[in-house]
Image 1 (cartoon, rainbow, N blue to C red):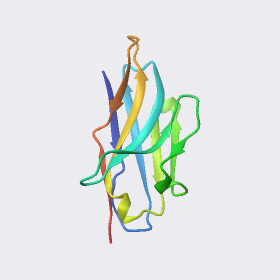
Image 2 (cartoon, rainbow, N blue to C red; image 1 turned 60 degrees about the vertical axis):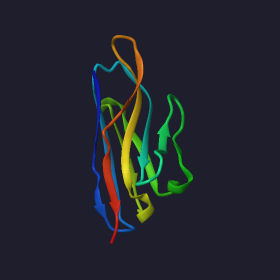
Image 3 (cartoon, rainbow, N blue to C red; image 1 turned 120 degrees about the vertical axis):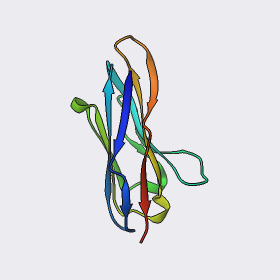
Image 4 (cartoon, rainbow, N blue to C red; image 1 turned 180 degrees about the vertical axis):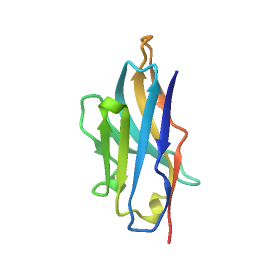
Amino acid sequence: QVQLVESGGGLVQPGGSLRLSCAASGSIFSINAIGWYRQAPGKERELVARIPSGGTTNYVDSVKGRFTMSRDSAQNTWYLQMNSLKPEDTAVYYCNARIRSYGGSVMDYWGKGTLVTVSS
């Protein structure tokens, strides 16, 4: 059993900052690709940032220069530092990971999401 739990969402004024965290726990042998996605009201879920296995971080164009994704492999935790937030960043943010369990299976897991609201 693997769980991903996000934290750090909330209400912030335009131009402000938030840091989201995602903690993975359970029967984890290895964590491969990790990512952050978001879904705004009435829109489809979109990729925000992703670190592929052994690769470099990629970001959706709308957040480049403002958001930074990082990872603490020892803690099975990753982060999304969000600066210069805009109202259009308002969404539920989800973390995602491709995880190999001790049983050998490889699956994609999702957190339940954390709401980020950017408003004055």
